[in-house]
Amino acid sequence: MSSHREAPEISQDPVADNTDVYAFVSPDRPDTVTLLANFIPFQNPDGGPNFFVFGDDVLYEIHVFNTPITAEGQRPDITYQFRFTETYADPGSFMYNLGTVSVDPNGSGATTYANLNRRQTYTVTKVLKDGTSTVVGDDIPSPPCNVGVHSTPSYPQYVPPAIRQLSDGATVFAGQRADAFFVDLGAVFDLDDIRPLQFLHTGPLFPAPGVDSFRGLNVHTIALQLPKTLLAADGSNPTDVMAPSSVIGVYASASRQAMTSVEEDGRRVGMGAWQQVSRLANPLFNELLIGIGQKDLWNASSPTNDAAFLERVLQPELARRLPELYPLVFNNLRAYTKDRNDLVRIFLTGFPEGLVPGFQNYTGPVLADLVRLNMAIPPATALREYGVLVGDLAGFPNGRRVPDDVADVELRAVAGATIPVVDSGYVPDLAVALLGDYAGQENGPLLSSFPYLNIPNSGFATMPRPYAPGS
Image (cartoon, rainbow, N blue to C red):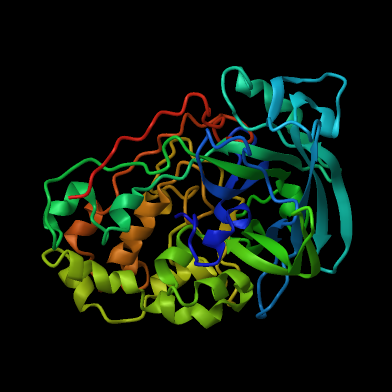
C-alpha cells in the first residue's frame, strides 16, 4: 500500500515494485505538470552495506495518454523510458562510500559524486505512439542514499546536480526520497480495525490514535516535470476545463526481460523480450479491488485491457466486508446491491461532463486504470487533502498530489460516499464521514519545488521501532 508489495510475485522483486504514482499541476510552476513514480518499498535507511539502487536489469517507464482512449490495447501517446547503469569506483572495497561524499565540480555522470563507490547513472528515452524513439537524456547521475552524518552530511547539497534538463524541455530527477505515502497498515490489514473507531468493530477495543506505517522509511523516485505544451496533444497550454484535450491519463510500469541467466560470477543477465511485472496508476487499485489470485495477472496486463477486471470494481469485496466488520453503522451500504458505477468513474473512465459541476477528467469509453489529470484546473490556493470529495477540484481523483489523503478518500468512496454522484436516491451512512485510518504524513516536510518529496531519512539517525508484543 499504496502499491507496496501488493501482489505475490512483485513482493519478491522490490527493485521492480512500483509503489506510488503522482500527477499534478506544479504548484510553483503552474505551466508545468509533475509526474512522480516511486519504486523499491519499505527502505530502512540504515540498510547497508548494499544501500538501495534502481535495477540495472529493469526497464522503468512513465506512460501518458493525451488523446481519447477508444480501443482496448491502445498504446500510450508518450512514454519515457529509464535504464540504469551501475559502476564501482573501487570494486575491492565493501564500502558503499569510500569517505565523505562530496559534489565534484569537475565530475560528470558517474564521477559527479566524489568518494561514492557504488555509482548509478541512467539514460532517458522518449517513445511516441507511432514507435518513434529518441534519447532525450544520457549519463545522468543518481545521487547517493542518505547514509548518515559522516558519509552524506548536509544531504540537500546532493540534489541539484541530479536535477537535469532533457533535450525535449522536461526536467528529470531519479534518486532516493522519503516515502510520502501514509496509511496505517497495521490497522488496515488487521481486518480493517480503524484504531479511533475500533470500539465499533466486531472485535472492539479502546480507541487509539492512527499510525503512519511509513514514518522513517525511504523509497526511490523517478520524477519528471514537463511543460503542459509538451503533454497536450495539440501543443497548447490548456485553459478550458471541459475540453477533452485538457485531460491526460498516466501510469507507470516496470519490466524485466523474459529470461535471466545467472553467470559464474553471480551476475544476472537478461535476455529476450521485455515483460511487464509491475504497473500502477490509481493508488490501492490492486490491493483494494483485485483478488489475490489475479494480482500478478493485473500487474502484467495493459491498463487498456482492464475490462477483464470490471466485476471487481462493480462489486468490490471491501464494500461487502465493511458492514460485517462494523455491523452497527453501515446499514445503507449493506442494503445497496447495485453495481458501483461511481467507482468505475473514479478508477476506470474518469468523470464525464455533468456529474461534478465545473469538472471532468474523462479519457474515453475504454476502461483503464489511469491517474487522470485535467491540466486546465490550476493548483488550489488552499489545498484540501480530501480533494474532489470536498470540492477541491485540483486534488484526487483529479490527478494525485503528494499531500492528498488517498487512503481515506478511497475508503470513504468504497463505503458509499460517492454513490450519490451516479445514484441520487442513495444516502450514505452517517459513519462514512468519519471513516479513515487517521494516519498523518510523518515523512515531511514536503519541498516547495521539484522533486517535492522530502530528503531521504538518514541511516545514522534511524531510531529503533518500539517493541509491540502480541496480545
